[in-house]
Length: 221
Image (cartoon, rainbow, N blue to C red; front, side):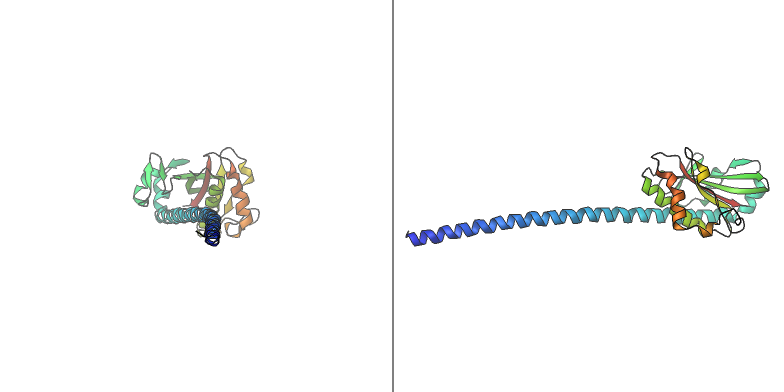
């Protein structure tokens, strides 16, 4: 082999090595980009799934409340006493995706619902009481669900007595009730007038990592 040919062969090998080197760097860059996009995609997917779950449970709860209110005259006439749980009496109203477990109902996301009839005597008034206890432990998920429940209860502004987030271990005086159209005014906050920032501030009591977070909803009957 001539010296010239040897130089040509060596140059080809050098060029080939350079090309392989560039290809490897480019491949690593592509993998890095794919990894970043995958993380972003997973995060977006999780957000979408969480929003879908919240929409589903609030839609189901709204339908369940409508069914309860259809029989408000029966609850007023047949249920006596200061407080009586009626969860076991409403099985036929429970959506197909829910199930009853003892004295409470579990919705499609696992949240617990207790239904009761209570009597207030000053002034005398009977109410259907729903206690919606969150199964979520993540603070943001609980806050998002709490705000969605506020928005759902606004659709019942003409028939609801009031609603409020409730935390067993928290200072519940910091989260006052918001009232329906027939019961608000003066010092009583109207549910329809709650702003985004007010709802978020009220829902922030759920930032603690525990399972004592509920959303209380009362309807006069």
